[in-house]
Length: 284
Image (cartoon, rainbow, N blue to C red; front, top):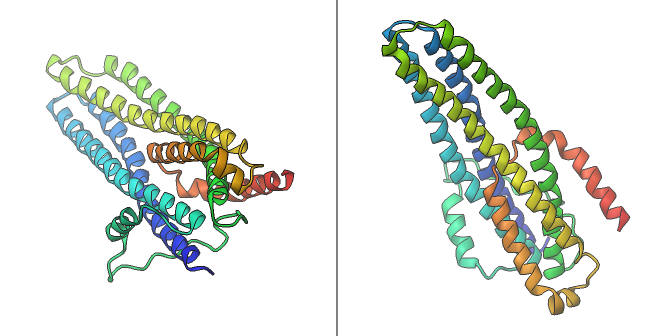
């Protein structure tokens, strides 16, 4: 295996490790709002000053959820940066952003006490093109193909969960408050926990919306790359280099804006998407 190919797979392996960590913290940031909802509902039904105890607990849980999401966002940013570094290194054989790559490696490389990250599989990239812009286009198109399908399926799955969560929250607010104590000194606590539960739902809504937006952008990128699929290395370099650079920039923005797709969903859809990609390659 050529050294740049080996290096690119190692970079991809490190990047995937960062994305796995991001997925772990995103997972808990999605689960904790369930506790926020339960504590908020409990607080609504309590008819004495103790209502503030679950209300404060709900606030603490939701703050933890937002903190976990912020931590996940940092790992996600590092992971997507690494994946694009690995992609360009594999496609071009070298990178003009070597300083940026070295800075990224120093930031994410595991310490000696930690387990070394496994490199990506040798068949991670499907392109058979020679090193160059043509190979870069192939990598970008393969990635956008996977991204647009995974973003669509993640958004659809979590939109269903969001609708259930929002429906239960609304039902709790509209049913529980009239049945609960009319003590005016507790109204503020109940309004706050209702707002807190709504805030948890809004956080999930923004995540679903990010996936929807990334799906639409990935679909447009895929269509733009499809127009270049029949061009040779020379034709791309002479006539479409500016287009490729613009697509590469849009790709980086798109992948950095959307949360990573949960690993369980990726594993569930992997064989189906591999079959779809193989069918697309056969049709060429």
